[in-house]
Image (cartoon, rainbow, N blue to C red; front, side):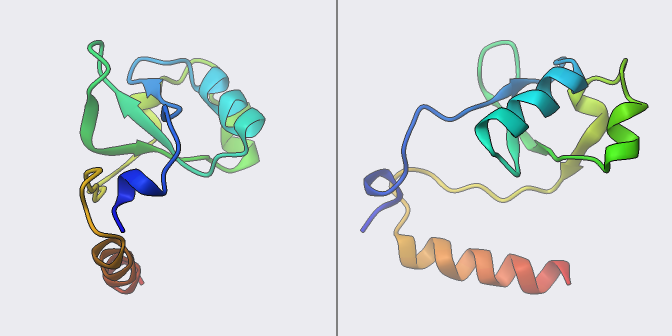
Length: 98
């Protein structure tokens, strides 16, 4: 089975110059743990994704932009990737990050 058969769309994203507070509110509204960051053309900004900050950070980050609260080295797969490969990749990445 392929990714395209299991994933829903369209993906919820935020532009790289997005206001941090609005991005955080969107994540809370949609119950998301991660929020892909895209450029002005809607293309994924490679090796980055927005991540929620701690509550204190969020409250003090009124002027922050999405690009300032992103993690790097994100691994992505395409819609034609087999789910077995996705699962193995996720497990390998989880082990690598620990």
